[in-house]
Amino acid sequence: MDETRLLTDAGHEVGHFAIQDPRNLASPTRPWFAPHADYSESAGLGRRIAQLPRALWSFPAASSMRRLLAAWRPDVAHIHAPSRYLTPSPIRELERAGVPVVMTLHDFKPWCTNRTLFAHGAPCERCKGGHHIQAFRTACVQGSRAASAVGAAEAYLHDQLAVYRNVRRWIAPSAFVRDKVVELGLAASQVTVIPHALTTEPAGGGAPAPSLPESPFVLYAGRLSLEKGVRLLPAIALRLAPVPLVVAGEGPLAGWLREQQSGLANLVLLGQLDRPALADALARASVAVVPSLSWETFCYAVAEAQLAARPVVASRIGAIPELVEHQVTGLLAPAGDAHALAEACTRALSDPDAPRWGAAGRERVRVLTDPARHTAALLEVLTSVR
Image (tube, rainbow, N blue to C red; front, side, top):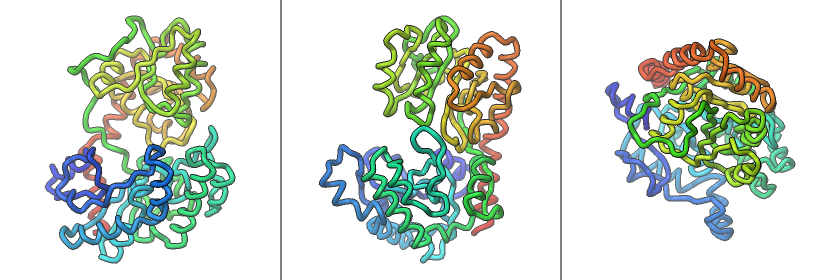
């Protein structure tokens, strides 16, 4: 939606295509959205089984796209995240209508059954070369062999149909993503690096974050999930004691993390924070820690902490080193090494150069994610395929 505003401010008309959902934001093309879908466990087993064919290839989404194109004809389509609810079926309708397509790589879905190139606690390329059966063998989709079987079937179907053949240009949010997808088979000439735009900087003015310690503290802000390195947080807290490790966020490991609080008085869990409260937490944190285990495609957690001029301690993995340069804009440590991450946090808390790292990080990310720069680069790509 931020990108919509940037393009609209630049004089362009923007429509959207998604599934119908009561949480959707306003859109001029909302009447043509695809019918609602729900593949969550709360939907019930019978409903999920009934929707299975639609999860592989959504004919309702394709039909909705045809109706949209009959009523509202775009010069170019920018695809962001078609998998699961929409499937790539609308891309085929765009191809039939002669609408050129650009796609941003928010994940690695065209090559990876579970989208993330991550399985069982580590980066994974078992399916490389189209060997999607490995997803079933490793149960990497939601930790379920049944879900992984569906994911593998979906991947083989999409490969057979060559569903992404109409994508004329791919946008990578980092050099790491560009290099990885070229390694996976894309031509380098098809991929353009355009970092995400950050249109607002963390700032105060809203409700303050609750229960923040008065003393210096280290902040983790992000999804509480395995790939984000959340299982390392108790060990990091243990080594930081008595300095508090404050955790903001929700996710599948939230319950597990609450169980780990016993005996860790310095592990403070805030739950999910709204944007003003998160901005307040970032502004008051001494150090931000980002212990990711997966190949981050960009890493908003790092970028937002840097915009707040916080010194960042992060894993040396994926696109993170493009934002965090060791001892220049923060400190890097080996991914998965809780001791090294904690030692780096301790250093960042006391090193007289730490404020300079925060200032340098802020300047780097302001330039890299500048909305005007992002919009100009995006329009160059969209114009080139039109």
